[in-house]
Image 1 (cartoon, one colour):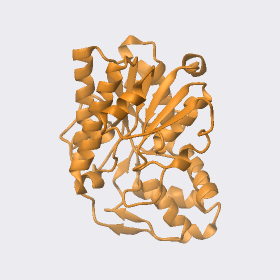
Image 2 (cartoon, one colour):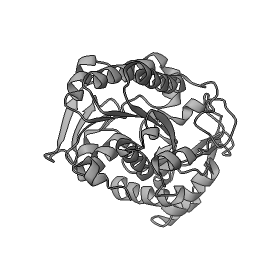
Image 3 (tube, helix red, strand yellow):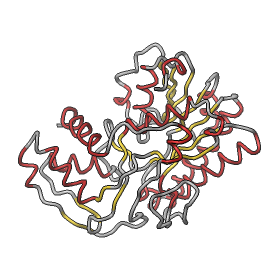
Image 4 (cartoon, one colour):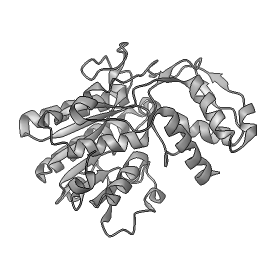
Length: 331
């Protein structure tokens, strides 16, 4: 068992995008482990209420700033031991509609953060990479060193992050770890807006007795990954003493795939415990979406070997917890 509390107590850790879904969960966990946490966020996609549980804690500090501004990055990186870089403009459709802004944030902002962290002598820079990097590679499961051509501007930006991280190790001896997130879901994930992720969006629709719309025939599959598994991977990446584990990229997932049809079926089953009428809500099928990868399944062997990663929650276990959170907080 990793002794995260011992390793992270009183360490200074910057979380960019710390008011977002993943970032705010990371901030909360780190605060509870005794770390001194700084959150950098411009609130373009994050929410102040995501920080309500920790905003008054003495070991928490909020900097309102933008990673596209190098001075904001430098200010936030001062005296930090570690950086967890979560700030990004997510969503494949958003990047297709507005590739320039996605690039400015995800590439320009990432480079600003690398430079600022390097100049501040940050010990380790752990960043959110993406399963979208696998692109048109049809091999399953996805193994870290076999990727295809990117299928969206978003995927390009996240792949460029990995290339920059590699160059910063070779050129400046700056240590990074990239975590390729696979369809993360769980508490605090925003169900609203045009680019809402599929699970919270479906949950809200079902709770309102509205028919969820599945793109395509529902047989596309994803390696849905519960937030607590992602938190665990970040903590392992921050604290690993194994020199071979650094300057690597890891799949961050559970290692099983679920079709969209099965996902909706599970959601209806778990939500109908709270409201039996939800079981009767019908599904609507729409067109396939541009840039979507048909199937996604991660090999987590590398993370198990080098980081000693053992995921805590299966998709179904995480889904039950997420459904309860949404029912308690959004109904």
